[in-house]
Each structure stands twice: as structure tokens, then as C-alpha cells.
Length: 173
Image (cartoon, rainbow, N blue to C red; front, top):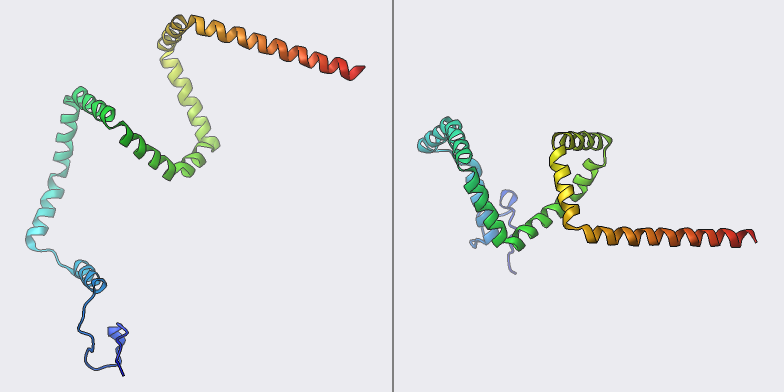
């Protein structure tokens, strides 16, 4: 008869271990226990204190660098995004898929709609001349395209009105 270990060492029915083999799960569990109960050495504690003590200084230094090199950092980011466009787009799509429901729920609340409306109105007021100039430049650049769209729109509406009149006339006969 072969004795089989049930791997429940704390409630083992044998006085001495009958299974001397260690598998990967046990090694992983032992490592997790060691990390959980590990104590920090004085050097680790000192390093942590130093990190916390100089944190504000490092943050301020980083902010000064970003402010001083704003254009260079923005250009570097533009170049990276241009060179890795597919990767950036895939990351954005993945993030959107992950947070889509939450974003849609937040966007649909009356508070969010009111806030968006006031933000849009404030932006339009602050940038009235800029927006007007952009619209004028677009209209000048796309004059023919706009005229063609307007003609098609008028023609379509005229045909719809004629069909509605025909339906009304045929219904009264």
C-alpha cells in the first residue's frame, strides 16, 4: 500500500513528514510568507527615511525641469507618438474599452452635462475671435465643397417636400 501525502502539513496525521519533495507552488508560497514577515534592515529603514525626506525636493526639481524644457519635452512626445502611432492608439483603445462603461455613466449624469455646457460656453466666450477666424479660414479654403453640399441639401429637401405633397394629395383623393 502506498502512502499518499495530502499536503496539509498543519493537520497532518503522520508524526514525521512522509513527502520530502517540494513543488513549485510550495516554493512560491514560502517566498510570499518570507516577504510578508520580513523585517526591514536598518539600512532599508534609513533609505526609506531619506526617500521620504527628499521627496518634496525631488518633485520641485522635476517641476522646474519640466517648466524650463516644456517645448523640448512636447516635441519629444510628438515625435514618439508619430513614430509609435499604432502602439499609442492600441493603448488608448484598450484603456477606453476598460473604462468605457464608467465614462459613459459619468458623462450621462445631469451634473456632468451641466458642467460640460458651462465649460463649452466659457471656452467659446474666451476664444470668440479665434473661433471666428478658424471658421472663416475653413470657409475660404472649402468654398466649393460647401457650395456643393448646400446645393445637394436644398435639392434633397425640395424632393422630400414634393414627395410629402404627393402623399398628401393622394391621401385626400
